[in-house]
Length: 318
Image (cartoon, rainbow, N blue to C red; front, side, top):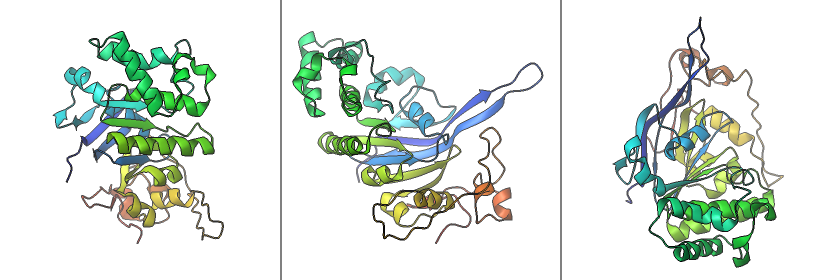
């Protein structure tokens, strides 16, 4: 079996929030301990509601922020602040907003060549230009786009430019943080197909952050479902979509639109309030909203097992 390009063990990120003269700050556990492995040519999707910690996880693995605890490794090398500079080129990120992620004052040539200027100072100007023009072609743009400004492009074209920029340093891992959520549906399909094609050509590993399960079903190989900073279900795409075990995953799937109007629908509406991330209840954090909750759920916290398809639930779905 192919060795993973990236592994994470109990990766966590906490923030101190509030506090003052007469009160202590509270701890916000944005990511509460995540384990995963990324393999070349495969896509791991991380899904969940807004605020569940998906984007914080993306910032951790791209070394934008340092984890509070836990660790992760790239190619077997543990990532530490002292070796960030040497490892950062191995993992790049594509952000959600194609309008805000590109500098409007720079031409596309400058945007694409800047990573090489910073990280490959030995390259000549001609070599940088050749690399940028090659990348423009690879993502489906035309040669004349090289000297234009971002405002001259559509949202889909801007996201293609952002993908090209992320590939300039020949990374092994791409973190895709909601890369198509700001695009029209017709453009979403084109960009997703581009990402699949690039993965096949370059043998890239993807960490795909999304809340749209229809997109996840199209592009992913494995899925992690997050709730309030923790993984509540993990498994292959086929296993999770065919037989979700955690009630939260089942509720998410029931809210996903289906193309077949004759397909049976079972819409699950969650009751109760979403707990504050500053005051996560004891026991299972999903208990206040779960229709299967029992006393054990309120007093003990279920953990993910080591099974290929696992759910952090005492009473999983059949």
